[in-house]
Length: 73
Image 1 (cartoon, rainbow, N blue to C red):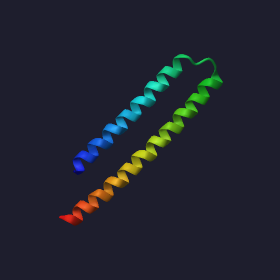
Image 2: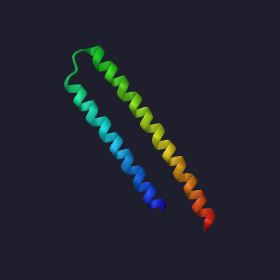
Image 3: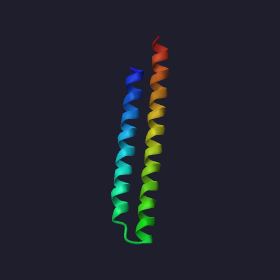
Image 4: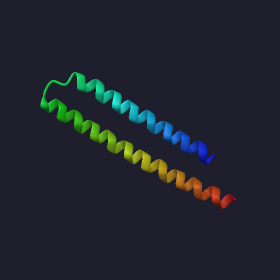
């Protein structure tokens, strides 16, 4: 169970990072000026912060599952 949750967390994180990278790459091709680039970089930074908080949340959930599994044994 724990292994599947970990694999699911890694899979979801990989998809999220891939989407962020793909969106950033596509947006960078159509960049017009410095202000556009800075706003896109800010957007990427916000996305990365959201991903970090999501990963931390998943890590906390996995820790809770680990504790419960340990208690059941």
